[in-house]
Length: 294
Length: 133
Image 1 (cartoon, rainbow over the protein chains, first blue to last red):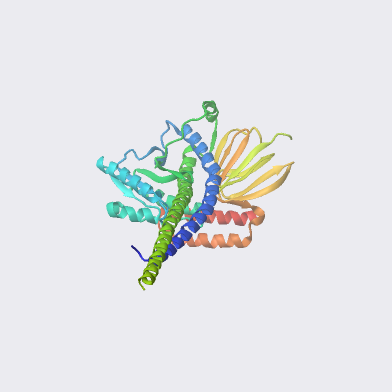
Image 2 (cartoon, rainbow over the protein chains, first blue to last red):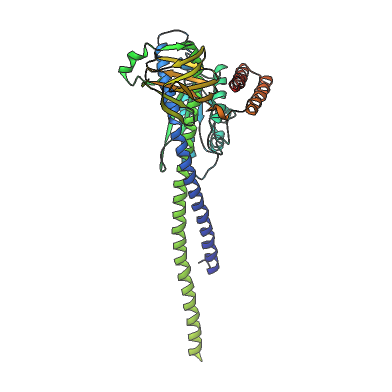
């Protein structure tokens, strides 16, 4: 049986924990709103780029000389995996679901006898994967998007990937990130970036119109320019989605923690009051029986 | 002229501009081209330079862009630009700063990729200087 003082201390400590978690929840909620707006604002660019890329790829179909970034290197021996996680914890299953998916993917590829390289984005993912796959890991990126993800940051990652691809260090590149569904649900998503899967022809009526496009300077030249840009755009999009998801996950986790702390305080308060009463009763009995004995 | 063409300027962070205009002049890789309604479909790379938006026979808006891509169809012109801002906001200090950073990048460049990126920065800085004239 803990003493009254112990209980009192316990209650104070849980109360301050609750203050912290509820503050974190509020911060996450406001960051979430900002991240969500940013993710939505970035959508038009990605959509239009995809449309252009579809047109170009359609025009290039069947022609030789298409860049390797679109068609692949012709082999799929070496896979580059880019897991996108957060730099900080306390956000529920956000980071662990990404590392789990990455582990599964890597184990699967290794079993097929392929080679795997991991380029981690975010500190948490790097730390979690280092134990099992440290030997496959190359230096990644931390501290992206401290003040919201910017395009140049995504471009940094894209440049690195492009350079590795140009050096022939890998054949297939896949990014693993949390797609934002809502504040309480995120979907772990695997997206292949290289070779880039061409968006399927959505509008068959449009297909005939596409044939008459003029290209300046030429299809292959534009494609060579647009593909690295597209890589940056896709990475930018996954970073934004991941950031929105992180804040959503943190908000939910902190909301739960706040509620649990509240429950705990209630339970402790009852226990405290009961033992306080028990003690008073005991003292009274002692006094009364002492008086009776006289 | 009543006919208008829908002009869209998009940056990675957001949709910057979407409005019907009479004509836009885009600095294409192989030379500037004007896009009027019913222009033949065209996809072109865009070099760093200035986009002129024409309305009522006059230039109503000038925007500096640091290169990108343009798609023209009969009804719309879409320009994807990584960096874009109104020409009025461009100052000679900005151009000089950019130029200095670009020159530094050129001298620091180690790989082919670095070199081509640095060359692009130089082109952007040069386009800024030309645009300011």
